Length: 217
Image 1 (cartoon, rainbow, N blue to C red):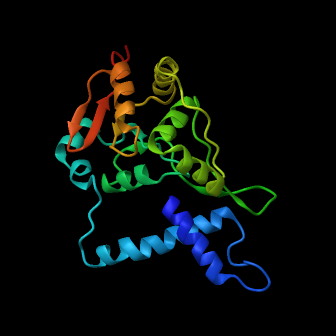
Image 2 (cartoon, rainbow, N blue to C red; image 1 turned 180 degrees about the vertical axis):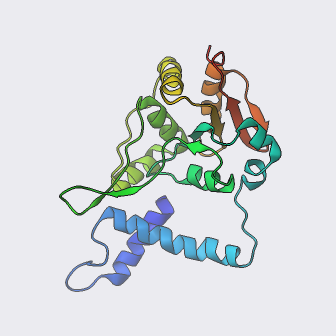
């Protein structure tokens, strides 16, 4: 994200005119341009040559993962699917859209303004906040909130996370929690989930907690 911002600022300078930087008039646009250029420079050549493979493709398309997360399961993921992060939505696509993902990113018309807005994360917000703080450094999270207009509150304490997770699972009838090792705090999230839901199943580098009525303790 920081690299995308830097690239976007450089492009902004190159596109500047005597009348101002009309091409890039907001932090959100700066980040978007930076991300596009980085994507073209790094991802597109590899994809065209057939060398790029999504990091968890083998795990998410395996028969073992399908057995743990059957068709139609309601799944909470780390990273949390939101405007700030789309990895969980990519993983859902790799799994052939077999399960129902909590969260997501959608641009919907905003009544009376003509603008668009992202859908809000589900309550209790402690799950969303804790997951985002684990995935990103403070600097990355600050840039992401500014660029995408997505507020992130403080992370839960361990005790509050336990209570919020129990509430979240009950409220949305969660069948499984799926964690991929993303960000500096991924191991801490795994510890938090294990202390609440017990030991997970491992499929490649993906961790899966199958949620049953007796799971939470």
